[in-house]
Amino acid sequence: MTTSHPLSLAEELVLITLDDETGKLISSAKPYALDIGIAASLIMELTLKGRIDTDPDRLFVVSTAPTNHPMLDALLDEIAAEKNTLSTAAWLTRLAKQGERLIDEVVQGLVERGILKTVEKRLLWVFKTRVYPPSSGIEEREVRARVMQLLNSDDIPEPRDALIVGLLRATDLMNYLLSASEQERLQARIDHIANLEEINRALSKAVHDAWEAIINSVPVIRIC
Amino acid sequence: MVTNVDFKLSGRVDATNAQQSEDLIMAMLQNIDQDFTIDLSELDYISSVGLRVFLKTAKALKEKKKKLVLAKPTGPIHDLLIMSGFDKIIDIQL
Image (cartoon, rainbow over all chains, first blue to last red; front, top):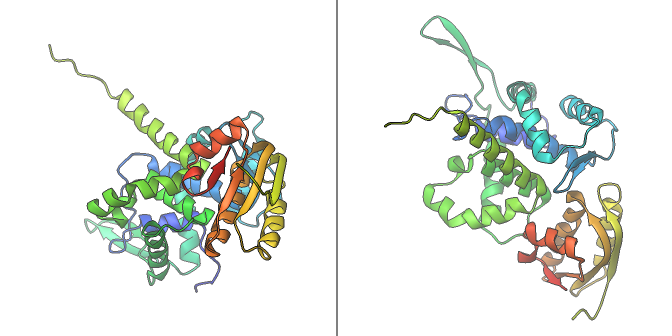
């Protein structure tokens, strides 16, 4: 059964990340980008609900009042319990370690709402695997249309729309929405919209730092 | 040069009081059919949630074909507005 309750940023991100045909998560170009992205989407939702706030130096709790959303409330409790003050990028890097579990929880929530369906498949006739194709695809098409309309106009974005643009930019999912030529044409607009929000800038930094860490951990083979 | 100030923000604006400022500004916009100027000369700090008030105000004014002017921001606030790219959609007057 579907509900009319609006989608959260995490749900929108997961819907765009799922391949409609296979029902599997499409791989983002940068490792860990989706894990960091899903953590960011939950933090963004908490800022939209007035529970936390950020500035370029720190992320801080404004209110611990429950949101009545189990995932958000668990995250809010974790942030509130931290005694040290951390930057937004530091929080994203830390929460990204729970990325896989967070994505699974969002997917399950979408299944419960009837937006995704569960299909069991057999791999090599032996191993069972579970995929999540959309029930109708209406919700995902609505998100894509909203983003495309914003990118192709000079409208001032709503905060929620600026945040989803930042999520798609940081996770390289713009590649799935736009052709290469469209992306080139719209890159300045994408960057402008995304950079309006501090969390988007912190998100891009966290993804970049994670990528750098991976590059730096690869042993250098010296050919003499 | 700033000639006319419609609203003044002072002290700190963050998630604890941003909604209050937004509500006041939006109520004022109901009766305004001209550009709207917010004086930032006494604003010491603004968070991400606070900055969203400017975006929402600019959006509401754009729908009326009017513009938002942010006047006299102090150095750190001005830097933050530039870093966030607000100067590309909002008129900032020093």
